[in-house]
Image (cartoon, rainbow, N blue to C red; front, top):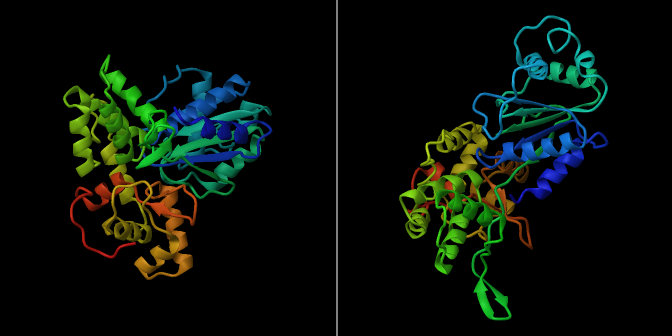
Length: 356
């Protein structure tokens, strides 16, 4: 829902006449990487491209696994060829060469939930060289930094802006339930409550919840699951104080979103982690329009423009900082959900440090 542009771009780039052979879909845990990869793979499969799918341990289970058979065995051999520590000297599939197994036509290999460490570069290069028609679509929380890797950052869903907008009937709330994040959240609400009685006030609360959770699909789904024992008013009030309050899905799903997000933050190198900590400690109201620019970041950290630019890029690729798309100078913001997890305290609590 709301990912038509991203899906179409992936299909175009991975098609036989596209320009990419290794596309790495990165983003925060729970942001929807597997679902977008599924949509792109399905579109390519309909167009006639065979698709091989491998899910690593811990990957989102948004699909039915393939039954055992020749295709599943082939997929396992290819993945083992990329990651196994020792292999026979007969090609990356550990037996017949990959070209003999796959032929010369186009084929897509999806590696869903790939581990943080990249496969050996020589084996990856050998596989792509042996099978000219092979395309790789990888999903994970962070890039491999491999040769020829096309990074594709998947951000949370767009959220309604705060404030009001002018209409023929006068000023109206800017939030619109047709926005992708709101549609997704309301769809999850309907899955929890068979026939929800949504008042105008409830719709406004739904819009605000989407802003408080920055349009993060996994967080929105988890929050909606709590409506079995709560209501939208209480949910909205609690999230306004602590956006991380409802990260544990009440429906018994083993998503481990809280642990996954903590893990992503913990894997940051020391430099970006220190910058993220400084940004999260800086006070800032809960608004999509608020943010900081690169000059403000250099002032906050006392670093050089080049160094701050590099650190900011790493934070953007991690998904822990996002661009604030608006007119004017380039600005960025730390999502409220990330701030709450980094500081270990509700974002509304008093915090004293330098402002950005």
